[in-house]
Image 1 (cartoon, rainbow, N blue to C red):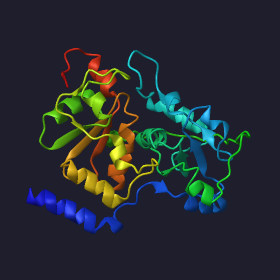
Image 2: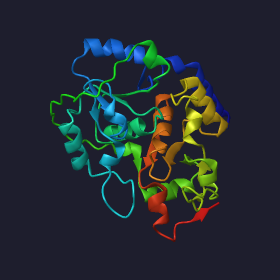
Image 3: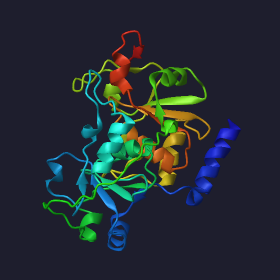
Amino acid sequence: MKFQTLLLSLLILLSANLKAQDVISAKDFMAELKNDKNIVVVDASSEDNYKKHIPNAVNIPHKSLYKDGDIEGLIKSPEELAKIFGENGISNTTNVIIYDEGSSKYNSRVYWILKYVGAENVRLLHKDMEGEWRKVRLPLTAGASKIQPATFTPKVNKAIIANIDEVKKALVSDKAVVIDSRAANEYNGTSEKPVSKGHLKGAINIEYKEFLTENGDFKTKEEIIAVAKKHDITPDKEVIAYCVTSVRACPIFVALTGAGFNNVKVYDGAYNEWIADPSNPIEQ
């Protein structure tokens, strides 16, 4: 226990030297956009929200990256994902910046998927129309975007994804923690919409919003580390996050990896896959 406390203390003391969060401010984004004409900006929100977008941003809604089937939310094969990204001008080394409608859910989901298939340079931009975006006069347009197709070669990063068997092992291990990133009433099985039977037996509840500010931006590294400490999450543990389709799990992935936690995964099958087999235990 003393060792774990020491690790957290070191994280806090050395936070300035940790790997920077892959989050860019609106001010820095505007400056970089002027100097790097090869940036690919991705709007990860719905087609309706994309009607007004950053000039030349390409629209990649997170739902366009899921395969058909009985279990909603499972991502397509690496080859299919690579084809979609390549058609939208993204190669493995492209400088990619993703934003969504302001919740940090959808851009985090697309960010995680890109990292999973081998994108090397991906960052997030928080949409804040009434705050930073207005201050820097970030332009929006309804015009069509110019897309220069690229070649994306999938290089799967298995270190950031968990399958159902790995989740089952983690649920009973004292060296791992499984996080249900949904609201408390979904975790407890008391929500009416969406209907929830409860949570994976052994999972703890940390709603993804605990890692975000009131306007949906990511908290500072120090604040993220404090949230982790409150829930007894230490850097030596494996962390696996999920929700219904793991969209809300991805902001937790972004937050913790950006704060220096190096063993964080997303359970892509999530609650939907778990309850598809009645033998998998659910508790309220």
